[in-house]
Length: 268
Image (cartoon, rainbow, N blue to C red; front, side, top):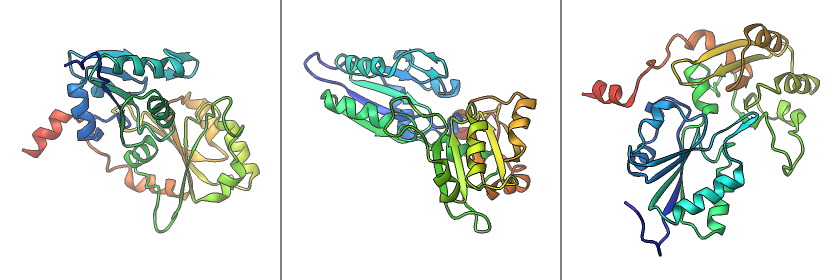
C-alpha cells in the first residue's frame, strides 16, 4: 500500500529490543508486518528481521565502530524521501530508540521536515542483557539506584567527556553501553574517583541472543580477563554489588533459541 503522491506517509521509530524475538513488542511486530519500507540498524537480530513484510523494501543503515553504511544525515534524508512515497516507513533500531539510539535526533529532524512520526519504545539492552545473565540492576541488599551511561561519546557533543567521578559516586549500579573499546580508560577513571578495585563487574555480550556470553570479574581484573578471552563488542558492562547475584541467578536462564512461533505453541 502506497500513499498518494500529495500525501505524506508516516515514519515509526521502532525499538527492536536487544535481540530475542520474544522481547519484540506487539506494536512493533505489527508495524513490521505491514511496513512499506524498513530502514534497520546493524544490531537488529536476524530473527527480528524475519518479521518484516516480505514485500517491504529493506535498507541496511547500520553503524558499527569504523564501519558506517550510512551517515546520520543520510539516514534522516532517506526517511524523509521514503515517507513522501510510502504510507508506512519503519526506522528499526536495536534496543530502545530513545536510549543511546539517536531516536530523539531523528524524530526532531522529521518533525522539522513536516513528516508525521511516532516512537514505539523497545526493551533496552541495558536492562535485558543483565536480566538474562541473572543480574538484577536493583536489589534490596545491594542497590537502590542505577545509572545508565554511554562509554562511546560522539564528536562535537554538548559536553566533551562523561564525568566519571560523578558517575562513580552517583549510584550503586552503573550500566555502561558501548564501552568495551574504552573500558581500560573508563576503569582507570572510576578507580581514580574512588571506586574500590574489588568492585564486581560483569560484561554481557550479545545479550538475550542464543550466543550470549558473560565475563565476570572486578575493577582490578576485568581488563586482563577481557584481553585473555579476546572479549569484544557488542557488550554491556554492569558495575556494582548486584553482580554478585549472577552466581545464584544465572542458572535460571530464559529459554534459549525461543522464537515467536515457539512462544505461541507454548501458550496453547
